[in-house]
Length: 114
Length: 113
Image (tube, rainbow over all chains, first blue to last red; front, top):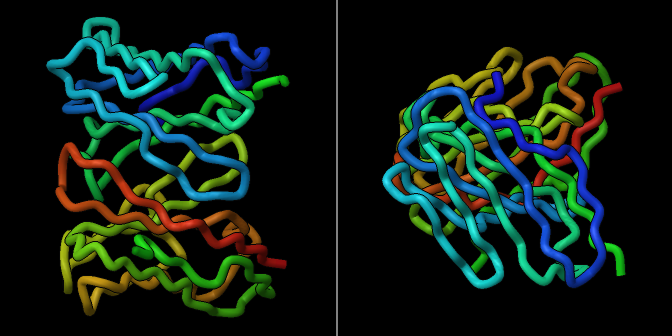
């Protein structure tokens, strides 16, 4: 069963705009991660935020975590065509994390229009 | 630095055939796992291993076997392929059990006719 659920399922914006996608989860977690998947490729880790953190930055990425609402958001600022991809949140609470394993949501498909 | 390597990239099987999907990592990671990705379903864990000689079932293990004889390799076996196993399969590895990012292979696209 899915622990994390991303919203929206699909998002199309103009290049240069900011993109925000959300993730909601059901059970308590130790950490939450975001991954990117380009078409036909494997997932690439973007950022990890621990349950005692509220916000984290990495380049043009900003992730927030609200454990009281069991939700997280990923903001991509100044979007570029190369940001076109699917984005997944993954949580470790249901089984302990790591190899045994992260639980992934269904993803948000982001399209950046030139 | 190769990271996680999966072979083959594409495979077509007939119902009832068997095959092995190969996965190797060169990062000396103890923890490895197999996921399948289906449209609209996200990634689901099939089997995982926390070290050589130790494997366990994930969310959707039926129809698949794994073994872990070395730290580097974690093959996934389909004993008797079924159309329901048509999917994209990803192998992943990580250095720690909790709180560490996964490194993914590039995937194997499998079609079972």
